[in-house]
Amino acid sequence: MQTVFRNGVSSLDRKIKLVNYLPQIMGEILEFKELTEAETTEMVKLYHAIQLVADDQYVESATENGVKRWESILKILPKGTDLLEERKFRIVTRLNEKLPYSYRMLLQQLETICGKSGYTVELKEDEYKLIVKVALTVKSNFDDVDLLLHRVVPANLVIDLSLKYNQHSTLEKFTHAKLASYTHEFLRNEVIDLSLEYNQHSTLEKFTHAKLASYTYGFLRNEVIA
Image (cartoon, rainbow, N blue to C red):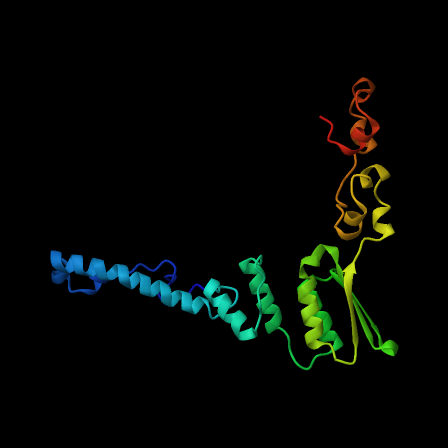
């Protein structure tokens, strides 16, 4: 957190120099200069500690210590591999949960965790079943979704939570040659790069037939031609 004082000086830019608080005649005495210099070091540490306490009041600016306190209050158990920003995100998600729980509120919470296109939800009212699929692009948040559902979904509904695996419609956009370089498990469970842009005729027509003849069809389609 960054406080701005009335004189326009930022709390991060504020310089502490205790000698300036002494009468001018005393500030010129060597003993007082040395004394205030030593005290200034301790005052800077104290000021910094006070600033950190203020920062920890807000999740966005919280330090490691502040995040630990938030997690303790909200009973959140962080993962050993979590980055500080990921832990803050989980805290904000928990704080955004509001009673009463409704279907619309559940969708909002899922969107917060997974993004707008990172999940699908189907409520089968006649079967008392809630089917939630998490996209592979956000599968690292799968456990968070699981905790959310078990915390807010009514106990009379069966929760069917799974990953949204790659379908044939996704894989059919790739050649057999490209897919052959991956295992079946990878093709099913991992995000396949769809951002590849193959060379078009308008790109290749700039080269002579003699130059293009030295490359294979696959190279001309998939690689950058110098």
